[in-house]
Length: 409
Picture 1 (cartoon, rainbow, N blue to C red):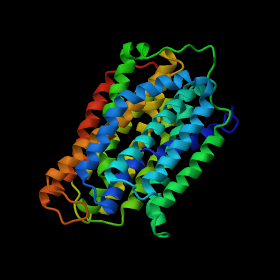
Picture 2: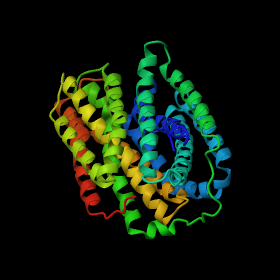
Picture 3: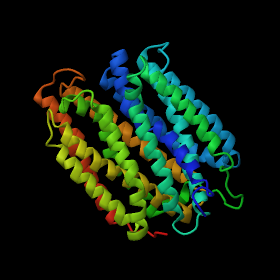
Picture 4: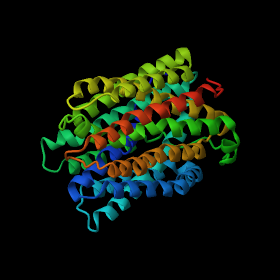
């Protein structure tokens, strides 16, 4: 079955929508509210962490709700897509009608809630879809899905910078573009939603009782943390540690474009070597890249561009292979997969919030100030948090993955 006849490009487009509402929000939103409204880094970190505490309860429940609505997924997805488009406009294109920090928290609550529900439905549907694609169906779908996601991240990461050269309110333009993408994605996925009535709902029990599923969720938690760290601190690192304001946009594009271009390569490598081996290789590449980043200082942005290429390529492995491994395992123990990806969504987002609530206050305590002259102590703290912490976390993730026995299709 060809990719077009299998409608895999539709999955890539919908993945781009979700990706545009994921990492770019952590990259852009905190700095936007610092620059536009003078909100403190520590306050933003506290709000982000508070939203993730909500997810402790919300995401698993959204997974269960997705399972209850599995025969009405098309309608439920359309409503959630409308919510995320409107709340994104509220976040970036509307002057806060209340204290900015409160508005920030309210709009992000809606963004993240809709994002979670859409992600759970999308990845659960992917388990069903992959079963129709024959051998290596999960890896084949993952190549399209995660490549689309990474291209979506590329566009969303660079869009405000590019729009800033053409219009006075680039984030308003970003919000409008996101709404257009949401509509196009929902239309492209028409007819793809729904599951076989023969598949019973399994609940959380089989997933939480399964040792491999628990280990994969733990690996996802630890392995996503380096991405959360680098995403949270990227703009501050480039602006202050590298003393290269104005290069943030091109470097972000280079990072995510490298990930998008590498994603198909990792998929093909996984089909030949196995997903586990390929993923470990990607993790090692990430450690090497971030290890060199520790040594960089003012004016070293050309070297950092090379690091962006290497670390971006490593991100392509993370985003393509680990979800495919988890989906493959869900097909064995929980075929409808909605509850499983409810837990997966929580784990993935919790790392971003944990990074925000720990890293931003630590920077604040070290005396770091965005856009200002900083002491060597503050810049040194920024460098260690951005580069050394991800290396340590990746080592732990590799250790756990090597000790996990997987059955690969």
